[in-house]
Length: 330
Image (cartoon, rainbow, N blue to C red; front, side, top):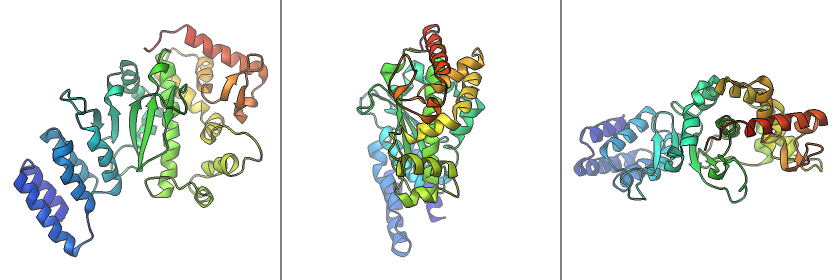
């Protein structure tokens, strides 16, 4: 209650210097008899450095109060506050912060007409909305950060989803990979959001801001997420001499294709079922160049290798035909 009252007084005082100084003095007295609250000191010591206007400051206060000053709320705040700086001197924050949904979008993402338009249309689908809802509301397990750039390790990837860092999951879109239909860009969105959802589930078991990649942690998934435990055991802990592709791609190829296909038909009601199914396979066939005669990449997912050769070639042809015969998003 001390914290809530202090926050309210600061808000009412429009964050005057005297009010903030008084809060620090009161907080120090409070810490003498209570548990240290260093996070609050971080917040107030950075107000003048990071926040451009009073509306932003009030947004921070409201956000913290609504989320009961949780560790996750402060973790999001640490990412959001630097994002609200004006490093390029244009008088605007460098990123757009959605306090309610706990989503940060870099300006490069916001001003990219293709990416921002597709993102804004995701709510056409209850499938996408349900996934995104898991990252929203009070006290979610993880938060999303949308950025634009080329990943040095995967420069040819449409997008990359990074494993959580202090409860934050970044999805970076390659700006050089947007010369394709918006429906295929939407497919990339749902693909990456599913990656993020898997990481969110792992964090919910880890009960911390990062994933502890140990055998005991993987086995601890058994009760809550037996599917993840199974795939990480088979494709990460014990590969049996095989050359597996990404663990999550193996899981997605086997269990999420119908979800992706259904999402695409909600996003674009002009799609046929065959087109949606072909698009859903993109990114889930494996890694490396695809052999034109077999339809197999160098390292194929098990699910794709189990598709007959003739059907693989039909799917690849349908996908390429869709790409060639629809206008590019950018």
